[in-house]
Amino acid sequence: MRFLKTGKVGGVAVFKNWRSVGELGVYRWLVLSLIAYILAHWAYLLIATTRST
Image (cartoon, rainbow, N blue to C red):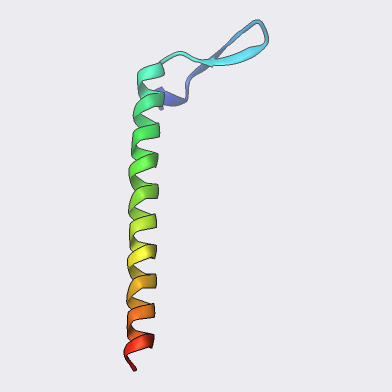
C-alpha cells in the first residue's frame, strides 16, 4: 500500500507520498459527507412521518 509508507525524520514519522495522503483525506471527506446526508435525510423522513400521523 503506497499511501501508508512512512519514514522517520528526527524521530517523527513523516509520510513519503503527501499526494496519496491528501487523496485519502478527500475520499474520507466524501464518505463522511454521504453518511451525514443519509442520516439527515432519514431523520427528516422519520420526523415528517411522525408529524403527519
